[in-house]
Image (cartoon, rainbow, N blue to C red; front, top):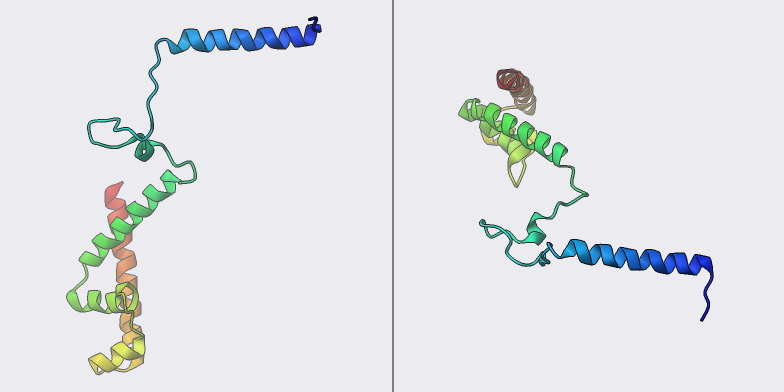
Length: 132
């Protein structure tokens, strides 16, 4: 059976590649990503990087969230409760609902909210500067 130069070259390249892989793999060990791979009990599947995840952005968001938590912890109880009711509670309330609960006008609650948010912004900046 006769073959052309191109086919012979392709065959030899494939054989050379197979030989190279065999010679290199003598020192390799195959493992499954589903086996327990390290001392903490993490499987390879859990360790393999998720390329769609932006780790840098996630770290930045966590730092921001921690900074806001620290700032919130520095508010007095009434201020924290107002911000929590408006933004953080699972069942968020409107300014009008909070005003009714506190026996205030909606305008008074709005003014308090703005003052607290301004204080929070100041605290966040202060915390960020102290972390640098």
